[in-house]
Image (tube, rainbow, N blue to C red; front, side):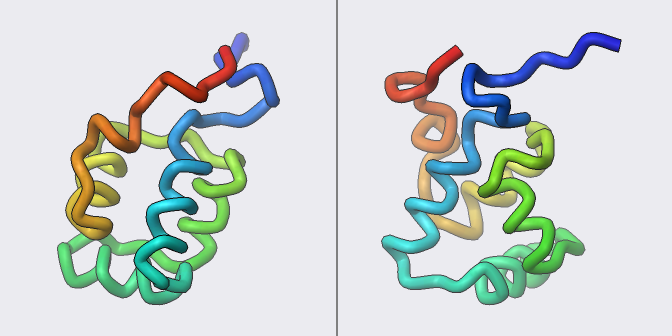
Length: 85
């Protein structure tokens, strides 16, 4: 089965941006996971690590929760300006 990947082999385009927003807000992966849990999304820091490292595909539901937890517009997580396809 063919899987679509970014030019760098990553399974998502948003992981690096999520990591940048998380670090800018001085949140650890554990603290971000805790914020997401408070929003009703059952994740742990391993989930965050896999997304940020591009090991995991990101769904639209994931994007909504990341957007809320990081308090950034979804469009900022999806910006294709620096994406290599």
